[in-house]
Length: 60
Image (cartoon, rainbow, N blue to C red):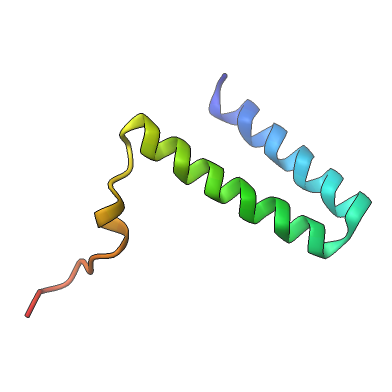
């Protein structure tokens, strides 16, 4: 499935959540989607958890 199609589906799900459940449901769906995205990237090997918690500047 191509990236634009995935983006379209994600936008449709978020729009449906907002329409049916309000802003709280929208934020919950967005948060769960972000966690799922990060889990998928990790399982594919595209994400190193250590990169999320280290600074890019000089180390002391």
